[in-house]
Image 1 (cartoon, rainbow, N blue to C red):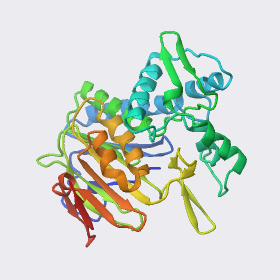
Image 2: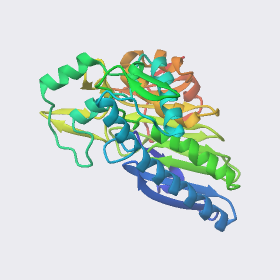
Image 3: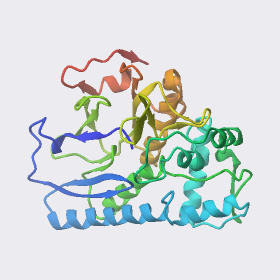
Image 4: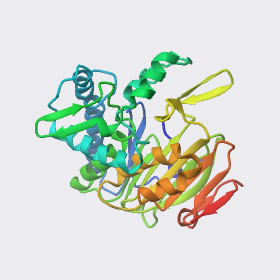
Length: 342
């Protein structure tokens, strides 16, 4: 679903990544491959901590699934019926946070857009290439469900708009990164790398060096660039090349522009790197969506979220990068950067 980050110490394209003290566990959760790497000599502690992280990922996946039975789907049913719903303290906190983050980006980050995502067929493990019914699509665009329609208080969650249907796919992976970091630190692990389908967070270092990751090119089987990731930093990515279908010579991705109701065009991929801070995982996951949807205004949108390190591949494959990120990365395999911006 997201622009995949290549964890370079797991590929054969680079050398020098010692495996002697890297412990790894992986699983398939959130509809993608996830992996946890721990650097250290205590193998038993590493395995215990990684197992705890993967169990937490499984819990979050089941609790907040967008279309299989979950707390989230139960909430959506009640909102569709015009009812106020009580939710767990955890979900209430997530929705409050998501509402504030949506307002920052003029609702381009819009987890209330689940009906539109489903209409395009992306609420299915095996989606098929088809356009939605034009009348149903226009009705949802006109209804314009967004997080401003959502009200949260001590009495629960309510909506002014019966078309509000939550899909936390653009938030939950970042939330899971933050939860993983907290679990690892509580288990006494200070050096680790967490990868959830391209959403990545680093803890500490890999031995004497920072963790090295590569940003995958959206149209080529190689990274765009290699960069070092330091303690507490998180990468969030959005791309049109993982969860998509092709029809009549066009690519339709799951990244839907709420203004038009259409899968976004004009951008192939966006990567943002968020500095260490509380909620860095969530911010990295969320910010990549409005930056992707903003098109040529991507840099201004990144500024809104306080993101100084970002990269965009436009619809024609031209690569633009902020000056701050360009200073951190090494282009890979002859890939050229077309534009550096402040």
